[in-house]
Image (cartoon, rainbow, N blue to C red; front, side, top):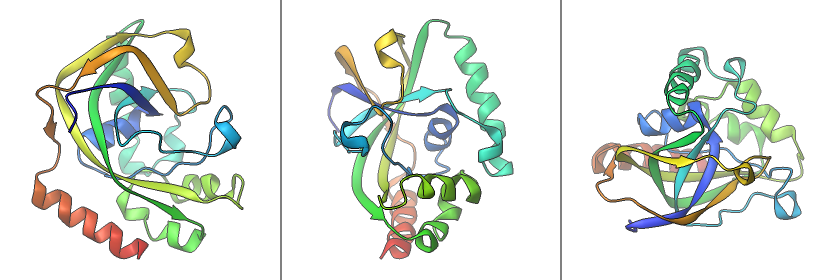
Amino acid sequence: MKDHSQKALKEWACVVKALEQGKQILLLRKGGIAEKGGEFRMEEPEFFLFPTFEHQDKTKLKSQAAGLVDESQKQADLWVGKVGLTCYAEVMEVFQVKDLELLSRLSSYHIWSEGMAAEKFQWHPDEPIYVPLLRIYHLQSPLLVDYLDRYGGCKSWVEFDRPIPTKGAKPVLNDTEFQLQEERIRSVLG
């Protein structure tokens, strides 16, 4: 793991919570409106997770995960005008899923509802869903950065003005727990 980074990947705050709590180790991504060519790209092998609240919706989560929306909102309410970075990610591999049946077999490995996963899939159905497998590291304490207007909008990546340290970050899952989840997901993805 690098000792600093200037990049962050934007993701729903509730999903960031699920990642930092070890409830999942993958993401489901398609291109954002502001992405080059409209396609998602894994620009960095390591990055911070930038929690967002735009479009976050409890009805698009499994019922047992809906509380993560409130949990993440309460935390954000303490950080007015700031973004709280709580975890860091290392990309282990990125898979492309082009089949809705295969995507549905990943259901037990993430917090999104079946409907939300299918909705992501159907948006530009000729393009794959990108499934990055991530090793997540929890930061010692939240790193607060000023929220700048340029961080907004439908884009996946944010670049900070300066490198932000990752010192003291610890893996959310120990090696055995992570390898077990990783192996199960890889067996689904082939």
